[in-house]
Image 1 (cartoon, rainbow, N blue to C red):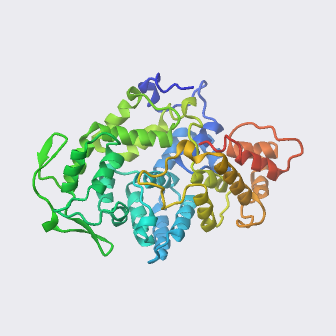
Image 2 (image 1 turned 135 degrees about the vertical axis):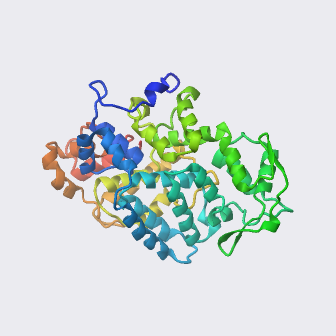
Length: 439
């Protein structure tokens, strides 16, 4: 049912408060953890039921006291990639970080920005540069979009990936300017070729030398440029500020975040999005935007329930999180690449297309094969996910049949298992169901 065109924005963005008509349920708690994290285990779901939506969202939004120590540990691990051209080890470390992080929302938004500021190591060929690129994204994933854009256009990996390591006064490089305008900020069709050429002049003098960003002043065109009705000797920072003054930028970013966190199936109306885009355009505060979305009536309504197809990372990590295990993330990164989500290798400068592109006859079979590999007692994952151990840990307190326990854990809905099915077969049926493929 498409209700996006008729929703009252005042109701939609007001904080959700449980009521008799719209109670706080296991289904709504599971929905929150699918969107703001990578799934949940049984303890997290039960705690959410007790704490309620406000306190649970507080915990997802507010970095825990031990986040700095966790980051230091994982930053040190990430540095172990050294000077390798391959990002395979870095893929594995990032997946492990997603699984173990005390702040999953931060990693979820880092994954979002990885597709927005799409850079492929197939072009960069440096794990060290890609590590630096990812850390930069993470530093502002829930911070300032303005700061993030300014930092990204000086990032060596991004400049190498955009074929923009040289930008001379005599030959302005339009590659980064075009991507900045059409993909990172305004969106496709919001600027002319003349706008792009003028913006490229402002980026002259920017180079990458020996893996570092370098500004060479003599190569900078300090003459007047004309951009969106303004004239001046603009620098790259000026151009970014001008781009962020355009209403199209806030609209473009808010719509992308909306599709990631709320609903990718039904385009929202302009009137529905207007309060968010106005608020976001004031200072480009990502944390406030994400918080407004996650706390909203709309987020917890039927209009947004299971209205996104899980990307491969979400699909796999949801199983691992629910079964409270740890698997080989090196193997998992390879299997996710086969499913179409090769971390640090987005397919185009516009990232992963997502939506229905994740699902076809071949990828559904591959998802089922991955689920089987993760759940079986041997093979590449060596039986590290133990469904029976989870039953022993929780089922006696859940006071329900085994199959229904797993349906509550992974789907938060009732199910009727086929007669005579084993625990393992029931669980496999759950994680290969259409519902589990939806976020």
